[in-house]
Length: 160
Image (cartoon, rainbow, N blue to C red):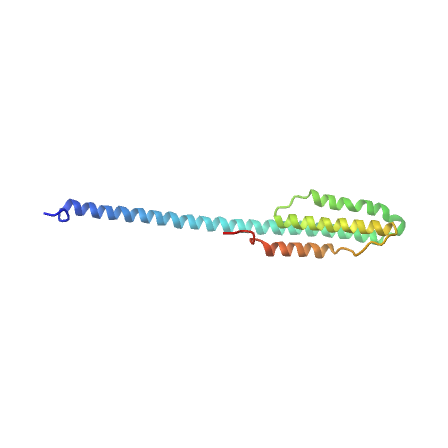
C-alpha cells in the first residue's frame, strides 16, 4: 500500500490545506482591515487640514481687514495728525508675527502679508518725510496669491 492510499496521510493533507486556506483568509482580512483604517484616517486628516486652512485664511483676512482700516484712517487723517497713526501701524504687523498659524499655508500667508505691511509702513514713512516712496503694495492681492499658490502646490513635495 502506498503512502497516498493511507487514510491518515490523506486526512493530514486535507487538514494542511484547510490550515493554509484559513491562514490565507486571516491575512486577507487583516490586509483589508488595514486598508480601511488607513483610508479612514486619511479622510479624517484631510478634513482636519481643510478646517485648519479655512480658519487660518479667516484669521488672515480679518487681520488684513483691520490693517486696511488703519491704513485708511491714516490716509483720511489731516496731515498734522498722521504721525501718531503711522507710529501705531507697525503694531498690527507685530501682532501678525505673534499669531500662530495652524498650517504651512497659513504661515506662508502671514509671512507674505507681514512683508507687505512692512513695505507699506516704509512707503508711508518715506512719503511723510517728503521722499519718493515707490509703488504701494497690494496686501490683499499678495495674501490671495500666496494662499492660492500654496493650496495649488499642496502635496507636490511628496515623492512616493
